[in-house]
Length: 273
Ligand code: NI
Image (cartoon, rainbow, N blue to C red):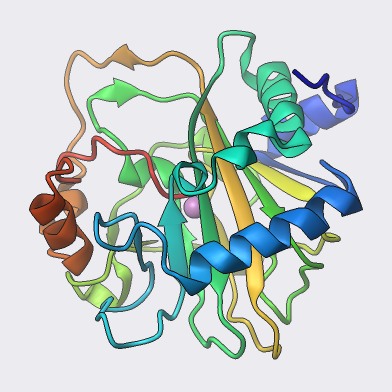
């Protein structure tokens, strides 16, 4: 078992709790990123997990014969078990424990790849809008790009301090129930802060922080590898109504049903960052 090689300073922890996000210049080594790109590109090339609904188009209608606008693979490490040995995982776990406490647990890992020239943004949303409405969530998403990210290829953007409120109303992207991705109904986008970072850097955000990535206007893929960590959940006495979750009818859910995996309605999964 590797030991973590980084830890957050007091002022970074305070910044995260105040602003709901944090950007750091390095969470792993350039050598690990280089190795990871080979594994990652292979998994996306073969659309690993498509038959069981773990690969799908996050921002489009997800037809089999169409290139995804934004390709997502959830549970990436099921298709490449060596990923669990990454220094990235060790450092991410250590950071999550600093932010949420020692009882924090890894929930899921996933990749989001924006193909070269993809004009699809990942619209403004809160990750908690995808999750179970009957639980109290306290979680962080750690988002690591495998190449430099800038405004041009879709770096992460945040609305500062948006994590201090409730979960806002969401709808399927473009109000199209066939699309898996969610978009918040309203946002003050003029308050956005963009976080360009190098390959192997990371952004960290709370599960209620509003976030967005723009289109990829470059001729190279924009790759991100994402880990979710959560403190133990407790049950709410009265569940919230995340009605937008029940309105989706996606090809991904059809594949999941056919493969015998659980339906996402009711938001059991926390599989999207
Ligand atoms: Ni997200």
